[in-house]
Amino acid sequence: MHLVRATFGARILIEVRADVVNLSSAAFSQGGLIVVDRAQVHLEQIRLGGPLRLSGMVDSNHRPQILALRNADAGKMSFAHVDLSRCSFQGAHGLGTVEIESTVSFASAPWWAGGRRFIADEYAWRSGAGRAHRVGWKLAAVHVGPVLPEPTKGSPPVLLQPLEADQVASIYRDLRRSLEAKSDMPGAADFYYGEMEMRRWSVGRPTLERLLVWCYWLTSGYGLRAGRSLVAWLFLVSIGAWSLFRFGIVPTASAQEAILSAIRAAIPGFPTQPSLTAEGRWIETGLRVLVRYSSRSSFWGLDQW
Image (tube, rainbow, N blue to C red; front, side, top):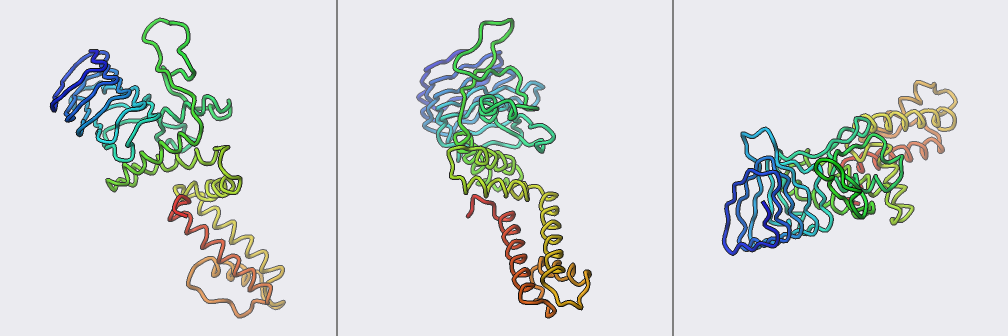
């Protein structure tokens, strides 16, 4: 079904079962409801005057695939029972208010990247950022480049335009905010991780900011990887205990007392150990600051600073 540049002056209800539904550049003056079965749906540059909901059929085994929202007026849209794994959000307006229900599926990252959900625009960046960024990342029937390759048998692949990391980070940020507005924090976590990943690899950001993001990723996985936070805490305590034993406790104190002092310094609320030297008090203060800094960044997130 092809309704390119169609104009709908009233609220509409469309139920369709087809292979392709092309609504590129269509105008929906008062929104409506579109229910699609198994089709590949094109929504590039659509314009909305009211809420528009696009849903797959609940009892169907084949979810419709949304292939493009580029430059679309997406702020009043909602999606349910659809596949957004190959959808490009480049240039879409109002992504911060789009509604994405839990029944919507995205592509999954490799296991070593946490298996998080990612968007096709990140895949477009990885395809142009170098081979190291593409290892293990797969998205079927997608071509990244200015034009499609020579015609091949079967359906042509989806064409994605190469993007910069900052562009992808902005898309992730808007999608994250749309889920946070619905208090869907678990659903927003993957988009937050993707946003921070793009900030980590963005060459256009200040060096100090990128260094902070790298440390945030390494020590806690942007506050979303509890295992890394525990390892970072044990590392800080170990370094603190060694430093206290060598320089910070009175000569009569033992290694066990140095370890205990480091643990007490790493846990808020414990008083200062009286057996510490002047150097030891500086070490203890530094350890308290580092632990408090790490825990605060893990809780609030680097984007809140």
